[in-house]
Image (cartoon, rainbow, N blue to C red; front, top):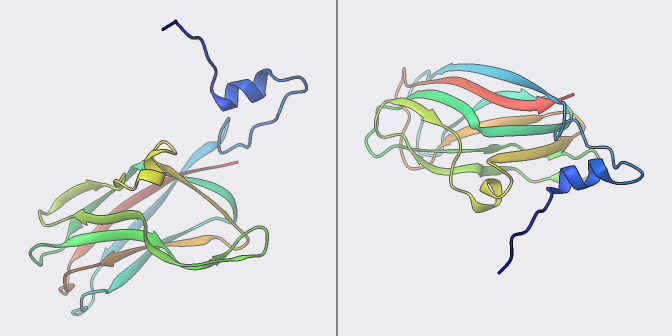
Length: 164
């Protein structure tokens, strides 16, 4: 075996002639925060959900590992899925809703602060991030997958994302 010296795709593009310009979600973008507050109003059956925020239109990189929430879902064995509603891509195609596209089965049985990093391999391979390209923005949604929602259950936190 030999010692190797390599470059990331992004550095290779920056060093190319002519330079391949990086999208701002990869270089020099601005991290923004979408804060959300939700207290359950009345009882919600298993599968109940709450829209947390709408990410802006255009290219947006959601930084799941930097996104956190205080979760006080009082039903035992509670889990949370995090995903998105259907949206229209910048190319005009309909992108299907995916209720667990970001986090699948986050254990929120114990009340406390949770990170939305999740364990979905495709997202982990993208550095714990997910890129949306939409015409009108994307609603991010939390779903109670195997537990009822009790009146007063809390979900309060923020999603970090990169834009121009």
